[in-house]
Image (cartoon, rainbow, N blue to C red; front, side, top):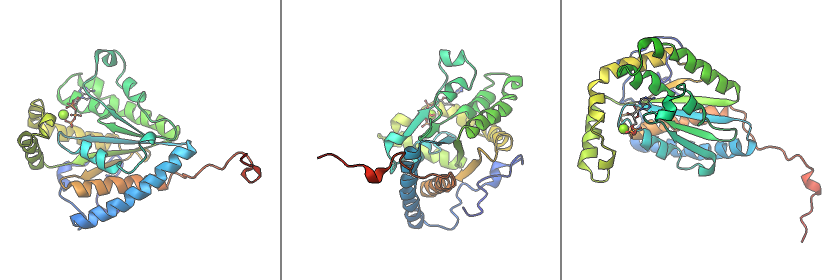
Length: 268
Ligand code: ATP
Ligand code: MG
C-alpha cells in the first residue's frame, strides 16, 4: 500500500479536507483496473482458504455519504468470490425491536462466523453519525459510544475476526453529480431518495462527525481507511488491495486432513 494517507495515525485528529477525493496515486483507469483484477483473483483464492480453514473471519465495514459508492464498491470488489462464503448486511433506520435493545445488539447478530467474510453496508457507526447529527439521542449518550465501539471491535478481533473499515470519501460536488445522475437515469432513479437532500445540507456536520470517528475509533485491530472515492476504479483498487493485504497476514491455509489420506481407497 503506497503512502497515500489512507490510515490516519491512531488517536490523531484528522481533517477530511486534507484528503483529496480525486487522488489516484498517479494511476490511470486502465492501469488501476488491471491491478484491481489481479487483487480480485487473489482475493478469491484467499477467501477459499478462509472458508476451508474455518478458523477466522473477516469483517469489512463500509461507510459513506449518500451516493458515496458503497453499493458499487461491494458489487465490484466481491464479484469474484464464492457467494457461499460471504454475507452482506445492510443497516437501515432501526426497527422498534432494534430500538428496544442496545445499539450493538443488531450489529452483533450480523458479525461473520468463522470461515466467512461479512460485509457491512452501513454499521454501528451510524449510531455516532446520523444519530449525532440529527440529535436522535443526547450527546451524553452518543459520546460514550466511541469507547463501546472500540471494546466491541476488540472483542471481535480477539475472537479471530479481522476487521477493516472503509470510508468512501467523495467531494460534495461529486455527490451532486451522482444524485443528479440518479434523477436523470431511469435505471438509477429508484436509488434517489428525497430524504438524501436534507442530509446533504448537513454535509459539514457529517464531516465533523466522521472526523471524530476517525480519531476516536481507529485502532490497530480495526483500522479505518479513508478511500479517495471520486474515481470509482481507484476506489475499488484501494479496497481490494487492502483486503488482500489483510488476508495475506491472517495465516490462512487449507486444513490438513485428520486422517491418513494415502491409505484411503475409494470403493468401486
Ligand atoms: P444508499 O446509500 O444506496 O442510499 P442506504 O444505505 O442509504 O442506501 P436507505 O434505506 O436509503 O439505504 O437509508 C438507510 C438510512 O438509515 C440512512 O439514512 C441511514 O443514515 C439510516 N440509519 C442507519 N442506521 C441508523 C441508526 N442507527 N439510526 C438512525 N438512522 C440510521
Ligand atoms: Mg440512501
